[in-house]
Amino acid sequence: MIAIIKYNAGNIKSVQNALDRLGFESVITDDNEIIRKADKVIFPGVGEAGSAMRYLSDKGLDRLIRSLNQPVLGICLGLQLMCSHSEESDAKCLGIFDSQVRMFPLTDKVPHMGWNNLSSVKGELFKGFPLTGNVYFVHSYYAEVSIDTSAVCEYILPFSAAMQKDNFYATQFHPEKSASEGEIILRNFLGL
Amino acid sequence: MLKKRIIPCLDIRDGRTVKGVNFVDIRDAGDPVELAKIYSDRSADELVFLDITATVENRKTLAALVERIAAGINIPFTVGGGISRINDVALLLKAGADKITINSAAVRRPALITEISREFGSQCVVVAIDTNIVNNEWRVFVDGGRTPVDLPTLKWASMAADLGAGEILLTSMQRDGTKDGFSVDITSEVSRLVNIPVIASGGAGTMEHFRDVFISTDCSAALAASIFHYGEIDITELKQYLRKEGIAVRA
Image (cartoon, rainbow over all chains, first blue to last red; front, side, top):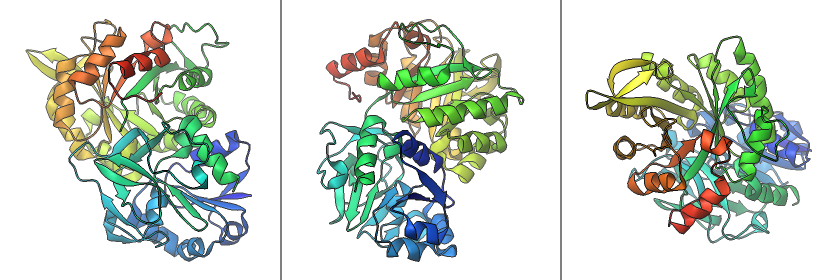
C-alpha cells in the first residue's frame, strides 16, 4: 500500500489520480500507524511552509516522517519541507536534506511556472528519463543546490529540481502533472 | 530554460464541449475529457476550461466534470466561468482543478483575489482580463466583454498582481475571433509591467502569430480556441515551427 500524507496543503488528490492511472492503489491519510506500515510514502503539497510545518508537528507527523525507513517521495512543498530551513515564514523544516529554501530574487517573473528541463540528473528516480525531457514547475521558493541534489534546474539561478538522501527522494516539480516524463519518475519511485 | 506554453481553451456548456471540433480521430467531440486527452497527447502544455453557462445549478455538473478531467489527464488545467465566491473556488479545486480563473467578480470586488490566494495560494489564481481600446486607451470590460469599466487595463493588471494573482490571462477583444494575430502592444505593456506570468489571448490565426507574440512580448504563454478545435493548427506542428524559429517550447 502507498500512503499519501494528508495535511493542510492543496491538490493532494492529483497525486492519487496519477497513481490510479498507473494502476497503483493508495490511501490519503494522516494516521501515523498506516503511514508507518506503508510500502511507500508520498509527501505532496502546494501551500505555505510555516503553516504546513505547524500542522505536521501538531499531528506528530514531523517526527514520523523523519523516522521512516521505506522509500519516501516529497513533491513541491514536500521537497522544501524536507530541507533544513525555509525563508518562507522563517520556518524550521524537517532537516532531512542539507539545504536552505530561499525566495527567488525578483529579477524575472515569479512564480517559476511552467515546463523546464533538468541537468546533472542522477539516481534511480531518473532511470530512463530523456535528456531533453521537460517537467512542470510552479513555485516561488527554491532549495539551494547541495550535496543531496539529484537534479538541477535553472531559472533565475540554478536550484535543486530533485534531491535524494538514503530512502528519501523529492522533486520540486510535479511529476503527477508532467505528462509522460512525470510518469517515468513516478514509476521509478513506485518500483524502488 | 523555461518553455513558452501553448494553451488550448475549451468552452463548456452543461458539462459538454461546445464550438465546432474537427478532429478526425475523435469519437465524441462533445466529451471534454476525450478532447483534453487528445490535446495533451499533441503536447498542449496546459488546458483551460471555460464554463459559458456558469449558473449556480451548473456548479455541481462542472465540479463532476472537473473530477473526470483530473482523473483522466496528466497536465495542469484551469477552470473558469462565473466564479464569484470562495466556495466556488473550493469546490473546483477540491474536484482537482490546478487553477481557477476569475474575471468580472474580481473587477467588482478586487479583495476576492487576495482571499483566494491567501486560502489556496497565488499559484492557483488566474485573473482574466478582457480588454479593448476606448478613447485611445486600453480599458477593462466585464460580463463577457459586454460592459465597459472605467478602469485602464495597465492599472488593473498591476493591481491584480499586487493583490495576489499568480498569473494574468489577457484577452484582446478587438482581435478575439478575427485571426489577425495577438495584440502585441498591450500584451507587451502588461507583461513588462507585472512580475507574474501573462497569457496572451485573442486573435491567433497562424503559426506566425504565435512566433510574433513570443518574440515581441514577455508573455509566458499563448492561448487559442477555434484554430485548434477546427484542426487549422496542430499543436505538435506549431511547436516544431516555433522551435525552428528559435523559441523554446516543450516537445
